[in-house]
Image 1 (cartoon, rainbow, N blue to C red):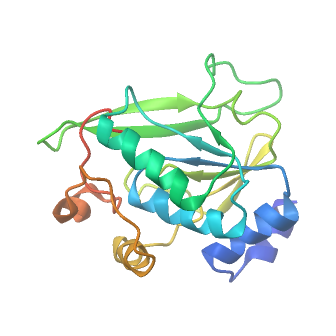
Image 2: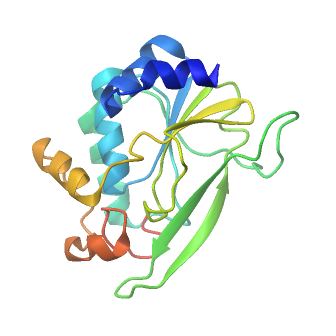
Length: 204
């Protein structure tokens, strides 16, 4: 199955790939994990254009800052998503015959380049889905999987922006007039390596 999907998506744009997965191959069985970083917002813009009823799981470390609560609310309203979810509790146990599904979160301390990393297990949250669009993007984009589409346990895991540079992300954000997080320091994007700026600890 993996080879068939990879061949079908070969040469397609990110938007074309997402449309194929969400509306054709895994209709009703696709879920997106997202944060409030720029790369994630880009993916959410595409998903909203394709099918705003797609389930979205917002992932964050700790308690959201007020600026993040506002940004998340405005993002959901702007894109018109109708199925917003939070990660479930008790996610550490790997489901029978499956793999331990994890998103790595990175949150910066305000005014510094220091950050904390946290593993967010999503085993229960992803149960029942067949395709997982992983778009949290908290780790530097140079630490990434080898393929846009791969198998992880019982799921097809997709990294839609695998080949996108910070410049490509910035151009897309500008083209669609997508606002960044208020606490993001744009001048530090290249150092952050994610096109999302430095965000205070637990901001998202």
